[in-house]
Amino acid sequence: MELWYTEKQTKHYGITAQIRETLHTETTDFQDMAMLDTYEWGRMLVLDGCVMTTDRDEFVYHEMIAHVALSAHPNPERVLVVGGGDGGVVREVIKHGTVKRAVLAEIDGRVIDVSRKYLPQIAAGLDDPRVDVQVIDGIAHVKDNPETYDVIIVDSTDPVGPAVGLFARDFYESIRRALRPDGLFVAQTESPFLTGDLISRVYGDIASIFPLTRLYLASIPTYPSGLWSFTVGSKRHDPARIADAQRAAGLVTRYYTPELHAAAFSLPRFVQELVDTATGRQG
Amino acid sequence: MELWYTEKQTKHYGITAQIRETLHTETTDFQDMAMLDTYEWGRMLVLDGCVMTTDRDEFVYHEMIAHVALSAHPNPERVLVVGGGDGGVVREVIKHGTVKRAVLAEIDGRVIDVSRKYLPQIAAGLDDPRVDVQVIDGIAHVKDNPETYDVIIVDSTDPVGPAVGLFARDFYESIRRALRPDGLFVAQTESPFLTGDLISRVYGDIASIFPLTRLYLASIPTYPSGLWSFTVGSKRHDPARIADAQRAAGLVTRYYTPELHAAAFSLPRFVQELVDTATGRQG
Image 1: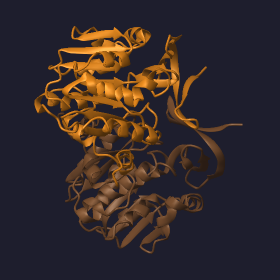
Image 2: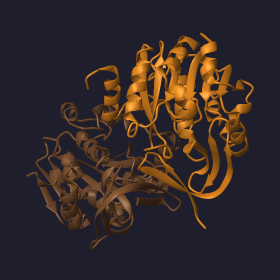
Image 3: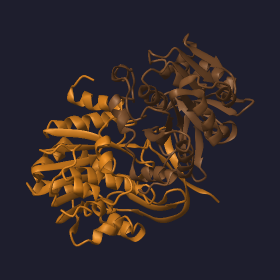
């Protein structure tokens, strides 16, 4: 018997992966969760029918959402990760020796528990003494902690269900207030090929709040279209520039490099046009 | 009734796309060919069970295989495209005003016929007076035409069936002889995520023949893993450098930009390691 997991990434298109074993399924207070063991990608965490991470390609997402923002800041000491219960982002965050405290604000504690059990290499950072794992609403936490963080990373699911509020203009405004005067934040902002409208809307919202807004890309095979965008809002530091070359060069990574940091901001023309549309610039 | 085309890109993983209509199927002298009309990607040309091109994302592949090599050459006048019967590559090649003659050497004339009929926007370049469409064996043509071309583009299918010879060291040696003294060539070289061994082998072969060898990447959603590699072998000009800034800046494109030309050569660390492995360099 062959078992295949098929995810419709759009109404008419998807990916399909052969399953060795279904390790866990559960309906939590917030979402449907499954842990699958696939032949091609290793273990795969699925939330509400969307691949969140896999053993084999998780390094791209986690490195690229963490190291660009942290390397652009000269001295990131306090970092907040909103979402990211699998632990992959904080694992990368604490590779920066400057970090004194990384708060993980995950609304769904079951994601943390199941990731600890089935994705130990991804969840490895959760037990670091600098990491403060809190099962809380990230939106409320951001509101309640003004001028607290150097870097905020929004590691959300897709903009449906529990993550809708993480793509709202109000939330970006709260983030601005929760950041210190030279802070910056990054959010995953979906696929340029499939959700260009979302990218334009979010980019425009962030650009109306932050003096510096930039978008960059990374290739993640198990995410829709394989090309993923990240949007940075920054109060002072240019996100495309590395602030501490020595720290960036010392990161042990499989995808991120200092050279790629800058290159990831060079956008294909159709993506640049999504950004220009958002800010009313002409291409 | 719903019809879905599912392509196993590896033994255990694939993509699936809902079909509006199967426009054409045929077994040619060389391969199985199908033209599908999909909801998500528009029309889709499938050869031997692999997506070759689709209306919606064809621009990435065709622009990126053509414009990097041509923009790196100061005066590309004579260009050879091996394969590429759909016409997408020559459509891009003739955007360079320097080009006087572009030979398309496609072994399977039926690909040309069916593309003309069902992919008119992709096949548009085939009727340009500078384009010489020849239904011939590209390998033999390359052997028989020493010191003829400024740029050679190998737009092959995957390294099975009729395209096996297009991934062989002998072929790259013939290409070196078919190029003029400052010529360069580019070949599509598959996915770094899924066929790293092939990339290392091919890169090593090309680097043993050409003084300058470089690899660059582009994001193509309907190709396996969504991330695709191209390898350039060059006799004199650095492939990562644009030789004629005005010409490159004047190209009407949707993916390629002069800034992206350079950035596409900034490789994720695991891809750089595939290249370093090939040439015996330490990372």
